Length: 207
Image (cartoon, rainbow, N blue to C red; front, side, top):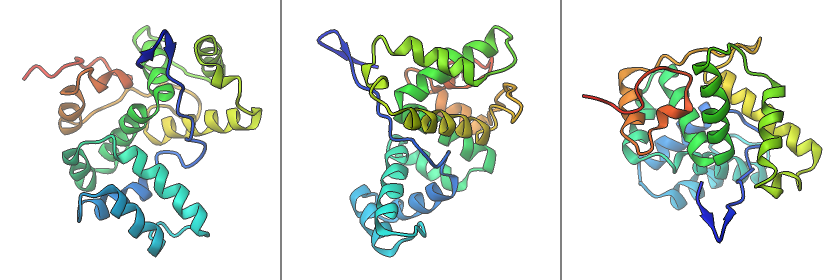
């Protein structure tokens, strides 16, 4: 996270619902790859209600959220997403959420991965709350959240973890078994996106 004038940037906190949005990202990615234009993709999806939302407002909101996550992927990663296996898709979408939302990325690196590496086998709501409490010092926007919004953020983050296959319903951390294709895509970034996963794989590709 970058800082300006000694202050941390505010967290983006719009991930209040939806999980990894696996179905939605497939629809949006296919439209994007026909034009490589995010504004045009957004307009077409909302106008034709391709995400099958109940209202135009909810369609616009869901489309915006999905595009915000996909737009942090490179075009080659978006192409990969459309041909990937279900497990590969979920791993890519977890990485996308971590890139898009610093709060999620920091939680993944500082709590999920760290607990895995020190052989602590579980991750719980209490771990999340301790993480949030530590971040409040630098991020007063966390204190500005309504309690209900804070609960929704926590619920959505844990839903993402479960959908990505990184946490069991019982709270156990599940080691990430990354395919060679996913590993290569994530490990070539600087800093490496491997930091978002519970794995002992090298942070950087060596081949």
